[in-house]
Length: 355
Ligand code: ATP
Image (cartoon, rainbow, N blue to C red; front, side, top):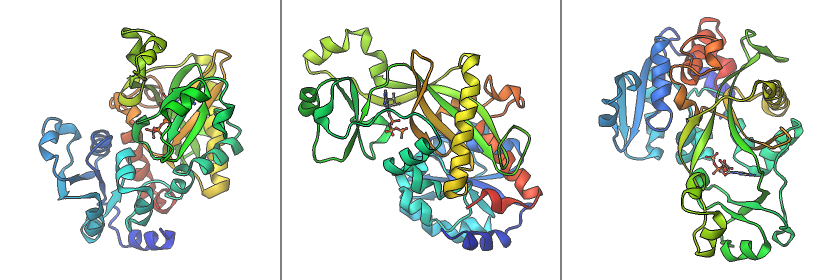
């Protein structure tokens, strides 16, 4: 989406009367809750109707709903949303189900830098970005015949780890692979998982300072993945595999966590390098992003993915996390997004954080 096109739409907005809008699913309860706390009007787009569910959570319910029957129909809401001075907040399922390519085409002011999608949704470009930032990623195994230690096989575009599997030898790989779907093979990193939730502001200097703006660590979580995380309840993976039962990686929830303090400086330097490199490559990853990591027994981080928006792992922290409490009481990622928009609007800087 052409930046000038979005800036022209913004120029006609009544910026004292903005509406925070997003699709109702995934992190929208937190986004609306945070926006309300900052005094914004809120609008929820429901796909096929989920209004009833929101009555159960009045503080996460948007002021108004617009219902469409499919994600594609969101495009037809353009005029209606512009009339309401709407700013769209992307989240995981919104981008996933609309599709990154379609999300790029939305002719509406959107929080963050949409160029990040080109780098994040292509595994090769994602690796280029993160390795240029000096992060260590799990080794990629190009030829399955070279598998000589545990690997994880990931199908492209799989949602929430669906269909991923572990193999320890080429024979195991061959037994399970679906050659019809594109896949990547990565070294399976042994260690503990931490999903780190950052917020980068290019317009405020009140946190960990970067060459432009500053960085915050708002929270971290660990995903609860079925069946791998509970498999030991009925036996070892080896025993189960012998009877044809294989562990899976489907996300079913998120668990709050804190990290030993000596690792935190590294967390900040990784976040810093990711942002600085993004500024060089595509004008910066703006707002919330998450690094998905494994910490090895040598206390080294291996980063297997980046998500460049608010992630579901921030949802345990609607009323703040052990880290965000040290910034401001009751600060969720959803609220932080609203604050950034509020600050930008009052300093005439919306163009810097929207695309
Ligand atoms: P999402 O888009 O929801 O983040 P995804 O489908 O892209 O998920 P990944 O996040 O890459 O999948 O991986 C899913 C899960 O598999 C991770 O949460 C983690 O538990 C495990 N995993 C991924 N890569 C590795 C690795 N290299 N070593 C060990 N475990 C891994």
